[in-house]
Amino acid sequence: MDIEFHYYLTYLIAVRAGFSTDIANIIAYTNQYVDDNIESFKIDEDKPSNYSNIVTQTMNILKPKRQLGKIYPLFHFVPGVVRDASLRNDGKINPLLTTANSPLVNEIMDWALSTDNPFCIGMACHAYADSWAHQNFSGFFDRINGISGFPQALVPDIGHADAGHVPDQIAHVWKDTRLKAEYAVINNNIRFMDAAKHLFYKFKEYNVPQSSQDDLEYEGRSLIAELLNAIGPRDEGNQLQQVRIAAYQTLGLNPEFGSITIPTYDKNAWFKEAVKLKYVVIPGRDQAQGAQHMTYEWKDRTGYTHSHWYQFQEAAKLYQKNAWDIINAVVDIQAYIKDQEVVS
Image (cartoon, rainbow, N blue to C red; front, side, top):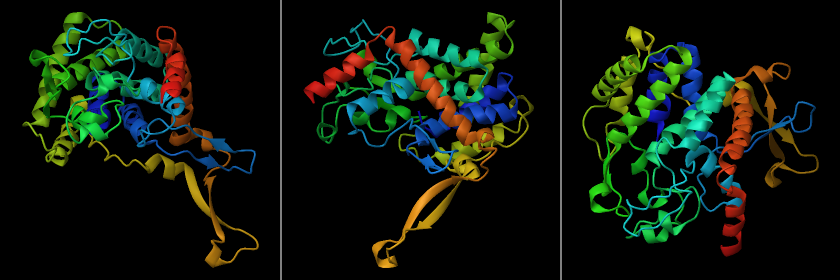
């Protein structure tokens, strides 16, 4: 999914389910920042406060398999342990294929909620929602991901690279030609609203444990109706995204959604609040040789651990470890990564 679901809709769902607007913003920002946290940094590298982050997404699908194996199946394509090939034209079975609302992604989501840490919760929301958008794809290099045609033949078969961005876009209808005819036409709104409903259930049960199933279903239906109204018409070209975002922000003004305009997402906001750039002159080199070296420093060297960016990174490390343990208990990811490194 893209920013519309990961940030704006997640915020609306979280507030509607009982989170404060401040906590909902952390959950939603974290959810989207999983896709934008693509660069490794060394902060204060020559000081006791030195710190290194991890990346949670990469735009380079040709990275080493070991590195991809710590990103894609944990944050974006949680294996669904698929044993049923009845949807596919080729009849293939692969336990690494993502499936919507799978037991493993539920276990990860439930673990995150148990931490009471909004950064961990937002982190798990990303994988949880993506289990709907990324279903029938694997986070590994595998021909089972391949969609026939051109230019798909030129694209490595990892994740939904062959399908481009369309599996992640709201209001889009597309065709997955790997699936049998009766399953091939994909209406993303059906998938995304099912994800929204189940995410609402998770949040509501966390905030109001005594909620009855009837109450959850009634509130869920009301929520979905309001979200669909904000989403509006079908939009294959994603031309109306900004119109939809404005509609989500307007929806946020309603009392049941917090009565404030949803802050416009800025992928650099948390980083810039916590970190500053510094240019260091390298002795013995003139300007023509590139005498300046760029370094990164904490803006507040004594209080940086309270910054949102730092807390996101610590949650990412904690999430990565726990998601790996949860998945690896069922699917031997490490063995699969090694197999891919041998054959590639």
